[in-house]
Every structure is written in structure tokens, then in C-alpha cells.
Image 1 (tube, rainbow, N blue to C red):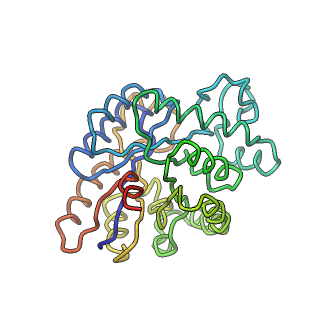
Image 2: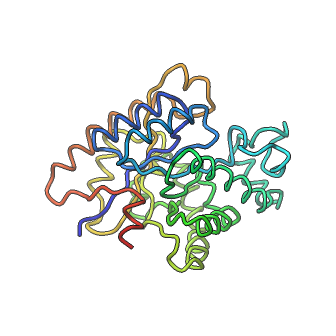
Length: 291
């Protein structure tokens, strides 16, 4: 069996331009999956696009940083920033709050469950879970999310760690690569938490292009695809879209680069699929169906 590849776009529901790109890429056969933000400003538009693209696997992009919670703020006080209404906007602030014990697991459980249920009530069959800014790297977030997945029969979750062979490509900045190397030390705790669910919740062998976030272009994507092992199952995390006035109005560091990622996927995925022993493209629903 050739290596299996899940091509997943994050931030589905953030803007109509991102939603449009995801629909177009799925129609072109170069995107298999997307994770939908329950608190995204373009949520309803994303739901309509998801329903119009039945081959697109749709997961829940659990948001615990940036934006506002789905639940009333008083239900999740430990997740909020200084204004008492919105999530913390800085991942560093969120990490510090976790380390200090200021983020309560019951708040994570309540808000994540509400986000999942919002998708389900909109008719989305949730294929998997992941998190905005990969916050489930941290055991205090991974543990409740794995419990929620198990309890709601969502049978897959993103492996938030990039494989060593992919990180060795050094596609990100020096600082980002150092941070990812340090964060990799958390992987045994993630795997230990996953093992408690006795294969009821599955994952991949790793997620590609985390280090290349903000630098994923045709060249870096081609390098990743050329280095794929002959076997295994991997997710490639990407952020395609259209840079437009709607994107200018939201909090994101990825703007013009979303156009670059969109073009890279169209060119490089089409190219590799034409080759002998091309990877098999799946989404998370296919992963669990074959388990």
C-alpha cells in the first residue's frame, strides 16, 4: 500500500475567501479535508460549502485562542483574556496560563463540546478534531479533547507533532525550528494519553508542514512530497485562501501567503499524483473506516 496523505486546510469558516479556496481545491482533487471553526465569522458559508462538497472530510478546528467562545463568557472564564469576553490572542499567554494552572479542564471540555455540537447541529459529520495554533500539543488540552472525541464517537484527532524527517528539512525559521524541537518532548505524553483510548481514537504518523507554516510554497511543498516515506499515514497541514478585504478584518498572521499556498497545492499535488507510486489521498473518515 502506498503512503497515505491527508491534505487538510485549517481555518475553514474564518472568511468567505478561505472557504471559497477550500471548495475549489477539493473540486480540483488536491485537498481532501478541512477543519471548521465553530466561532468563525464565515461559519454558515463554510457549512454550505461543506454540504456542496461531499468528498471533503470536515473536522472541528477547536479554538481556544483568538476570537470569542461559542458559549457565554461566564461559562468558560478561565479561557478568557483580560477583557473577560474573548479568548487570549497570544499563544504565549495561553501557554503561561496553562503552566500556572489558570486554565480549567472543565472549561476546555465545555467549550470544545459546544464547538463540536455546533458543527453537528449544522449537519456536519465531524471526521476528526484538531486545534487552532496546535494547542493540544499540551497534555492539559489533549486529555480532555481525547475524552470528548471518545465520548462523542469522533474517532480521530490530529497528531500535532511533525515527524523528525520532515523537521529535518529546516523549512521554518531558526526560532520556529528550535521551538518545535523542544515541543517534540511532549510527544510521549500525547501518545500515552492516546493509548488510554484503546484505538477508539486514532491518529496519523505525524503532521507535515507545521515548521513550514507561513513558508509553504511550491518549492517547500515539493521538497516535503519528495521526501515522503514509502509507507505510513501523514497529514499535511495547510492554510490556503484568498487574501481579500475580509481577511484584512480578522486576526491572522497568514494573509498574502494564503494565495501562495493555494497555488502551490494546485501545482504540486497535481504533479505528484501523475507520478508512479503517488501517495493515496484520503481524509480522516477514510482513516477510521480502514481501522
